[in-house]
Amino acid sequence: MRDLPEYLSGVRPRFRQPSAADLCIEVPSMAPDETNEKVMEVFGRHKDLVSLPVVEGQKPIGLISRSIFLSQMSKQFRNELYGRKSCIAFMDKEPLVVDAALDIDALTRKTVEYGEKALTDGFIITRDGAFAGTGNGLQLMRVVADMQASRNRQIMHSIEYASVIQRSTLRSSLEALARACPQAHLVWEPRDIVGGDFYQFCTAEDGWFATVADCTGHGVPGAFMTLIASTSLSQAIEQNGPKDPAGLLGHVNRSIKQMLGQVDGQDDTPGSDDGMDAACFWFEPASGQLVFAGARLTMFVLRPGADGVEMLDGQRQGVGYVDSDFNYVWRNQELQLPAGSLVFVSTDGLIDQIGGPRGIAFGKRRVRELLREHHAHTPAQVNAALVEALRDWQGEQPRRDDLTFFCFRT
Image (cartoon, rainbow, N blue to C red; front, top):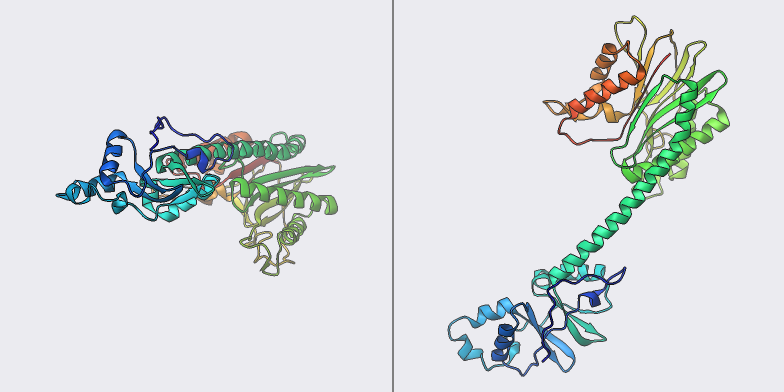
């Protein structure tokens, strides 16, 4: 028999992709003809030994669990009956046996499939079929936890860099907005590090174009969709100009459906049913003309001296989804706005946020009330009041979605 080394200091993977070999511990082993008295002696000398393998020649044939063995042998007359009998009497004849080259992911799956005994009593590790040692469930869980933590760190680093990329793609729009309407103000807060909301601004000689959009999902999937949707919108503007918001929505609708194979209700990508909701408008400062087209989003308008806030509801048709008709036509809504009018658009991250004493949505009514209350303030102050009101309303409730809203004064 081989002596038990010091092994309880912990086992950590030595390689980027650890294997069962990293868990292998050299432990004493028993031959089939050795007695249960000998097993008792080995367990007595090695207090931390969880299980004892039985090896015939070089081939492992079973595993003796310390807890089961001692439980059986402590019963009345068991030592007299079984003490000098072969150690195979209380041996598990079907323990989990794995090769040292098996990677940790595969080992974890096998251990879970094998059941609780593989975690509590451990498993046998071989090299080319010959007994090499044992591993135990605690060590396996520790290595898996270390691997998961490492993978999570890598994923978080990737997502954080994706956030840098997403913000960089949006920077040119902010620069365009600053040139077109310096007093305008935008709030963009992804629920996660990256998000599924995006905005887009561009200028022309006689006016400027704006979009606030909410793509399917949030986090990384949502961020991928923002790249697809914003690229499609940029191409549409380049080809058709920015003065027809409804036409641009139709172009983006066809582009997304073709790109994702979501045409005529036939989804070529399993599980894919993606698109966006959007509020798009073209504004000419000299004339005060505003042209709005919406896909399931609303524009709020407060004219100087008006008692109430007007709402321009977008059409109840999303952009690019499987059930969105390929040739669907959005319509433009035209307004003539006097100087000093307040215009506000938002994705549903604001409207749908749950909160308050009854756990209900923030809603459009509260948006209208806040716009009336702060009608004389700057767009930045209006947005700050909305952010504060939303925080108070949300309370301890989790954030449901990405948050984007935009305010300007004509």
